[in-house]
Length: 211
Image (tube, rainbow, N blue to C red; front, side, top):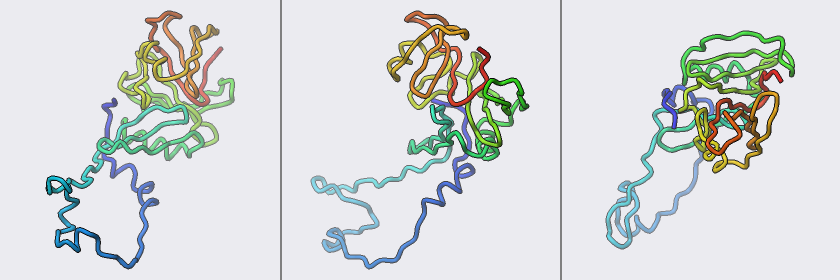
């Protein structure tokens, strides 16, 4: 889905440590131990008697996915996800995205946004993040954004209208921005109001569109 990667261990130590707990308990021997099998060898297929491989998958890298609620980090091996939701501290979000996509190309305050002043930061590949009062409030992807930066369903810049409509309930309408669409919490612009139209703009949350 996405090509930009980084070491997962470098990104998610805090989130993962919150999930770790320790406990002491009294353990009852299981059937495998009673029957003389080695529990360290893993489960055994009751039909063939062959060992069943345990869950060995371990994430080594992460990729970034677009979401109507913000962004998601996706583990490359397990597919596990961690949300970076709108309302999250922007310094934290910026640090995570920088680890994945590299140093931002530019960042600056836009005082003319209809929803109020926004800090707008753009990364290589075209992703733009929007912040206000120190919080992550939106993202936008423009025509030149890397087509590999997509939602979890694979929708991104350059996706067809058919691909969009197969993944979401879509409303298409004409606006001052062009052929606009709404797909749940996602919004965007199509190249035309036609079956073979392509997604050329995509955004979620609060962004700086001039209508």
